[in-house]
Image (tube, one colour):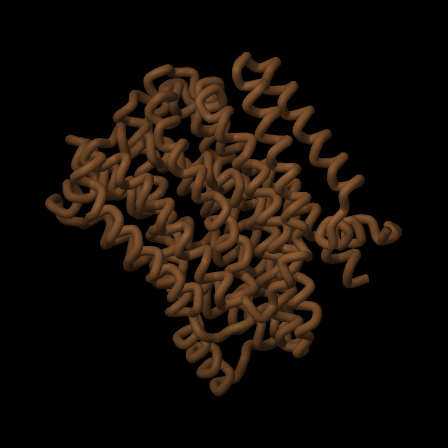
Length: 491
């Protein structure tokens, strides 16, 4: 039963990962078509600001909910207390934060959005209100994930992340960045309120906790949650810092953000599996089931290494063609492709961090992920200071990000070193042969360009990977087969 439930959760998350990735592709393509380059840059910056800011002001409440709702799954009174505390704190944030964003001073607005001109204040206000709505989205989805309601959590993330914006851009006669942000903020709040009501998150029949339990809950949010709030802000901020430093040139900042969305296609496939791993690992940690955690780390690490290396091998030769097919505009495509060519080399360590940070979070009370991110920021600023005068601000930002990604990926592996399997588990020799084959097919077909060559390359590379996994199995691929198809026998 445990394997069946885990397999179902993984498959649901992988399906929605594909849907969310497709939605981001459609959203950026639609925005690029409808907005001018400056408007596009401001729109993407505002979305990044609201997401990163939400990760800061939620103060780790989402991470606390996800962990402790899972740990107290058999104690509905405590669980209700954790949910009620988080939602009550959000109401306070909404009242105080909403007022503060409306009254934000003009110099601060112009510092955040120097290229917005007369629309800077309105853009800042709706960016702030979207930030508050995003915090509620984080809290609601954390409860659903802790309860293993993966279908509902993923559907809400799909709509709140890109779905509502796609509908707004499609249905509006003359869409604007500010109007789109406003519609998204209202839609997120409405969907979250409906979900809270329908799921009876705080309207259950269980009584509320007594005073001593409330003190315990508040202390847990402070001790466990606050460091995680800083950690998640730094996590998102690492993907914001390069565009932030280029914000005076909204067009160049937009290039970097779109390029980052390309690299995040990989992490979008890994993140949902990592969320399942966090909940499962928290339960196993509570039961002191070290063997099950070690098995989960081995499977996740194998999937991350294999998927990220194979995708990188395919995308390096197809980068320019894919970006041009996606965005259409030649000038925009060239600017984005130049940044993608840097960032692709950081996909493996970024995927390692994004995929395994949930297990690190579940297995240690100490904020080890926070320490990883601090190291990553130090590497970024050091490299940027070293390179910006030599290769220009935009190129320096891209290369410095790659260095930061490698720093956080290596730090994550260091924390989990006692759970990692031996290197022979991954079958690096056979994986290397597979990578050479995929890269050869990708380079050969990319010379022709066009959609037909792209489809042919995908089919040939997929067939090569499947055939190699069957003919040249490794301990990792055999474990994957047993997880997905329990009747599969090892050779």
